[in-house]
Length: 229
Image 1 (cartoon, rainbow, N blue to C red):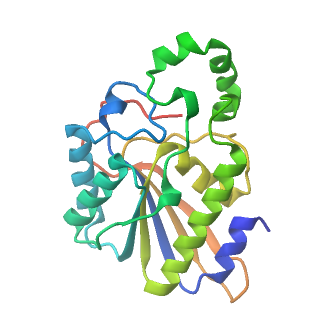
Image 2: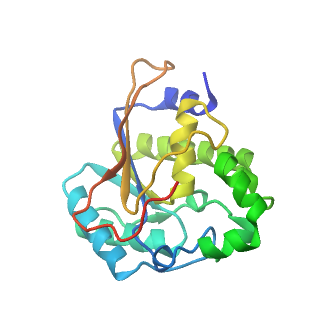
């Protein structure tokens, strides 16, 4: 059994884990790579978060987590306020991947400055960027995030919502399938929802796990920026 699935043997009750990418940011509009650089939501991103909050209204969510970066924490705060959910708790583990020397650059600027790595990027994704966060680090962080989600779900006896980033969502999903590399990639749109439904079968036994939604659009706001990956 893979390391992440083993964590689910400790889950005590049926749980839905809602994972949401942040709304559209100012940098998204500029086609600028963010990584750990901090940008606020655009006006459209705030509308997306409000619309997502309407979708979450009435859901049995007992705990809300957010990445420390502004675009995620703004999204989580708006969703929680609109849906009458608990105030978001910052979880450092949910920060976006470190995009290294690409951080703060537009897609066009990256292509001009680093053409060789961009060619490799087509097949290796962020593993092609010499100073970007490593696959091993991302796998380890995803493992820590799932461990926290499951521990908190057991404590609060309810569902979990986490607001994070397109790059890190890749790893939250991929690790449940046992993958430890960037391939294959998933599409992640602003405010896209990823929903994992987990049902314990027997203590110490693997859970029944189902990815019910992958990048599901829960807003009624028109996309202005193409999804990433």
